[in-house]
Image 1 (spheres, rainbow, N blue to C red):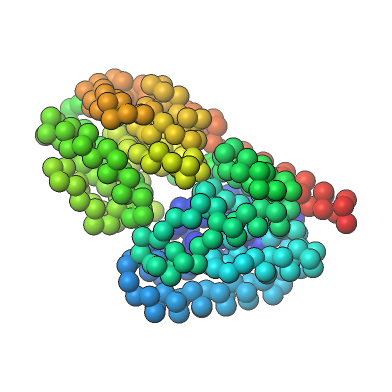
Image 2 (tube, one colour):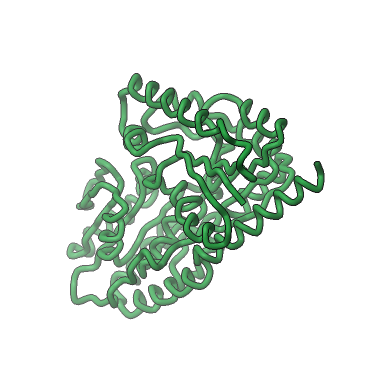
Length: 364
């Protein structure tokens, strides 16, 4: 089987890295030959994370569009065209419709509530080009929707998807070293890992963090990927995200935070941050919303929080009790190894793609 993966981002982009790139070597091992074309190259990806420079961004988008269309020139040699998010980040799915009409087998993969329009932090033009209706059109257009969680799968089915399945995101523990044994011999580090577009969610628990920073002056506070984020009363140490730097940060974190807003958009999140904490043996303290409820066994592989009092209670417990942190860290790491192995997920993906192609052939 030959598959053309069309990703939104290069490997630096979390959704493309987790939904496509990490599976490639395993797919090759089970007979799936994969070619990948990313809409954004590395320079465009970093450009997209910075404010302003609208003219440069428009030119980059035009260049990316030409590259994307050129990648489709030999589409007939592929058994499946796998869209990690949409084919183009603007305009109606005209090309996708044409490809299906001409006989292409189309799969649409998503791990975020793309049918809910969210404003871009950096670019008004990007906001204007976004459309939830386009995502719903794609649900109905492709042969199969692959969703990062059951809530996203059910949304695709409700919108009229021909076929929709859940494929949970894998986490490669071979890439992430296990945290050193937790102890309180050194200051505890509380960390957050993510991107400039999501660091704002730390504001939801800002009063709690400010109070804890006063009560525990020896605690260290670190953010990787939050750009220029600041919080009065909390001495956050900020570093830029990189693939290697992520591993260094996780080795330093003892407790990992993942607050989310109490809205439907949060239900579309597929637990990436929390699962990465778990894989690294960092104790996840997260919002009790959406997929987090399926991912975390409360007080066993992490802590689920609904109220400010929950956030304070469980962070305090984790700060003060190194033995608790160690028990949770070991259980969380084991959970990821057993449930989210990328080889296992890749095998599921390969079987699914074969089934989709066979079904299309039977109906044609």
